[in-house]
Amino acid sequence: MFAETKAFSAFAVDDLDQARKFYGEILGIRVSEQHGLLTLNLAGGHDTRVYRKPGHTPAGHTVLMFQVDDIEAAVGELTKRGVQFERYDGMDQDERGVTRGAGPFIAAWFKDPAGNILEVLQEH
Image: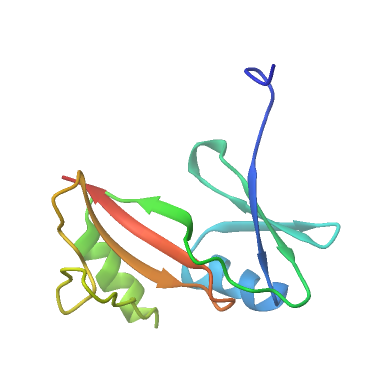
């Protein structure tokens, strides 16, 4: 039914101005705005919408993942830009928050200003 239908994902934030600055300036994503919605213009045409939700409660799971070729460089650059990486109990992470678990990815997690969990990952 939807095999040829354009689709996109979306998630909520509590402050669109903070989101615009974080995604556009800190993460370097092309951001556009129309009708009170932000659109993150992601590589490959996979746009993601960001909308303001009063009383927003961040999701307890990852809402957006960024696959990179060099996680060490990405984590280093994000850290320089003021991003703080999350530490999770029971997870084997290095001093920068990067995990090299048994799965197919090396990964690290951080939050946007609204508390949504984002992930940067590299395939082994």
